[in-house]
Image (cartoon, rainbow, N blue to C red; front, side, top):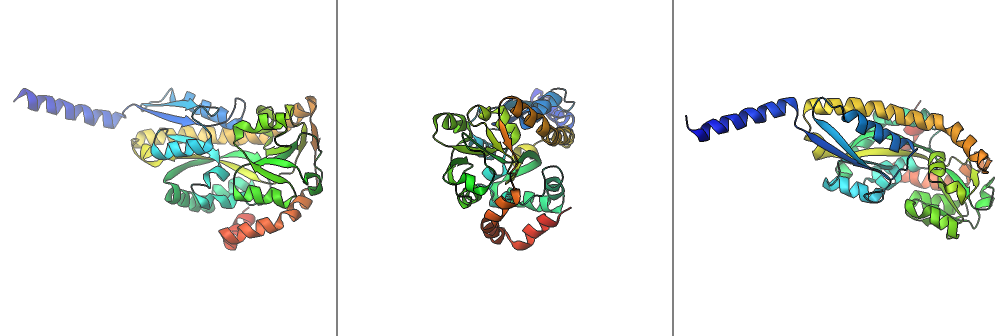
Length: 324
């Protein structure tokens, strides 16, 4: 038997063995979240779990916007420069319009159960399929960014009238812009990384975010008036390059899915349990926390909700509202 043929047989045997046992694969993830934020904590935990992989998996995480903003992360996941990212549904809707249905103001009853009943059921499966069709990205899971609230430099927001004329930073999504314009504010789209400086310099009078982001990005230092408006519930969608995930062996994918399910449960629970701790911390640090009449804000944004309900379909929106 020739040496060439023999070496070819050894190469084929090695390839078969490496495929069976699982070739070494380093997954990469990027996100914009700071330390202390549940998505940051979840990806750090996933990286640690995969460091002990039995199938050859490992993970490298690039946190705090190291590869750019959320739009940049989506684009890099699409081309395979990174494997996955977690982004606000409102940012993902620029690439996959179907996910925008979840951004209708006051769509969700709470932040602890209603959102998960929706995305962990048939509606979530339908939206995931549409996201893949529209963007080419595979949805790995749905994480929480909680209910979003308003914070200002100088004004306690108790009613929609208190927002009149306030220049407020929002995510650059039509529904966010329309919602705050309907409340009488001046909606001002701006990258997340610029918000602190914009508040410090008075470029904007206000912004909106969840309690975790407000605390961990230290926005309270520049805008110490926090109003629990709860105008949107925001999903942090974890999306991945579909080809990269398809290249995993069945054993690798099973191990990844198990680890990912564990950190997903942790991430959601962190958001749920952190709320009271965050509010206590904020009050201790001089923040005025206001509990406004949310029904007044809901009424003021009804035309916006109706507009986007027509866009996404009354039947779908009613199914979301009715989900228990």
